[in-house]
Length: 114
Length: 117
Image 1 (cartoon, one colour):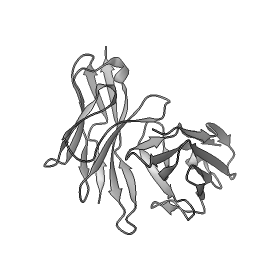
Image 2 (cartoon, each protein chain N blue to C red):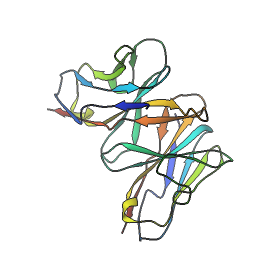
Image 3 (cartoon, rainbow over the protein chains, first blue to last red):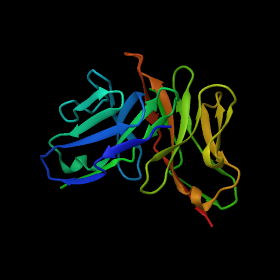
């Protein structure tokens, strides 16, 4: 398996500001993904973080709103820009390791936008 | 469109009874199927996967799932439910993006399992 950490674990932010979420894995991984989840609901894929190139965004998500970086095989960041209360959610980082086909998830970042 | 469905929002079962959480899928090609569990205020944990081979796969915590190609289903089962199994369960399928050949995972809407003492 892979051990994934996310920072911050939670934050309360003001409307119009930006927050950068970090995801660190303890081993090299092939794929890194960013999801959004409302408590008790399903996961929505935001984008695939590609190492050394632009992320692949899903329909409804754009780079200006959710810029993503992945400078190496073990680290990625997601920025939620110009936040509004509708961005309040849990943001999850997940990875697929080199030796397994399943995803492992980070503990999540609970974001509240006032 | 490629998708995965969990038809039940909630499943209630008495402790000690067998449980089934349903999942059906619609994908092109051979499916890679997964089950995850999320306990309250916790992250998602991997339970089991089907990629190829035996249709009955065994996973963590005594759970198993049966892949049925003709019915395009991948139902999660456990012979004897525990109160501690109460959680939110997600079925997921790995799909290939036709434009790039890379893959992503699609999750079902989730099923809340409640095991009654």
